[in-house]
Length: 185
Image (cartoon, rainbow, N blue to C red; front, side, top):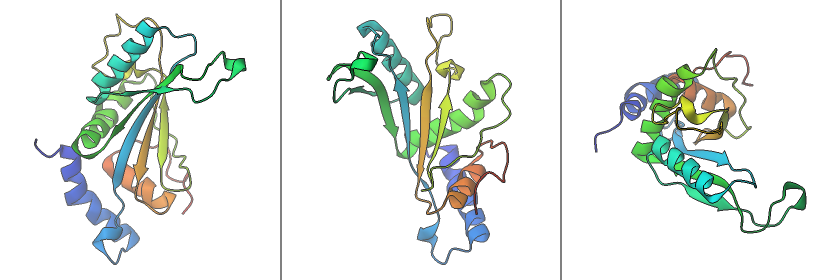
């Protein structure tokens, strides 16, 4: 399998920019993407065909078979019983991660109506999560066949020690953030 374009861009350009920006003493200190996790919640009232359809769509988007997450304990207010499916998750690493990130940045995000960028709110440990209200923004999904709107969360796990380093990493990779002052130095 050929090296993804985004991975080559990271190796040749982004690492050098990060070294200049943050003055790393060692090349191993430069932050990198570790993994990308895609999560989609399923309502407690979802039937088996809906769950299979959402799992098939997430597999089309990520090019990897997702895992169906089941409830660990019962919660009566949500009509959820232990063992019932309540989410779908897929973890991407390596080449598949870079293929997905490129598709997410260059194809899916610009397909959002009235898109002006992503708000840069990190978790304090160099990780970034963005929510997508409707995953039909991906070109693999047939919008004529979809019955209901299903959202998903995409979490970018990095090896960065601070939010500022993670922000610079994702920005140099091409993530369209709305403002640069949203992350603490």
